[in-house]
Image 1 (cartoon, rainbow, N blue to C red):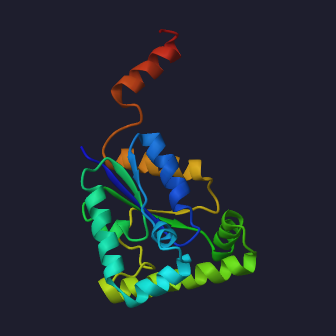
Image 2 (image 1 turned 180 degrees about the horizontal axis):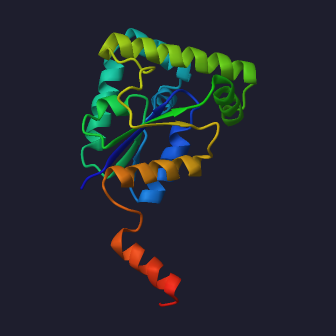
Length: 194
């Protein structure tokens, strides 16, 4: 079965860190296209690229069409803002939450900027994304009612969050960890067998 796990969250919530760990843990492809990459190609700042996208909605539409195409083959972890909404046949939809103070601290550390700059950056970026997605798709990224799991990444390390998601994926797919072979091996080891 071709598994598709979508992970979303606001700026600095840990989408990419958790997605990388999860993809490695489950042996799946990682799909994580970003506006950051597109902005770098155009040699403009991320916020300037966001402002450009606010005026030209075809930027988002093209980005999301490309995302859906990349995920078509399945067996992947998708870590983008709109992945859980765009990938209609996703097996699992995850929202990563962290308070704005924790997210700002991560962005400041990651991007080498002050905490104040980071707080301003994430506030502007989150609001820009929310308004655009409402206008283009009528999607409210603050509504997580269609999600399978919400994880507070301030309380869990990326490895721990990945383990929680892996367990949820295995439970949802009707598989137990290690399957029958894993259970048999564990029983043998307990009994002193090989």
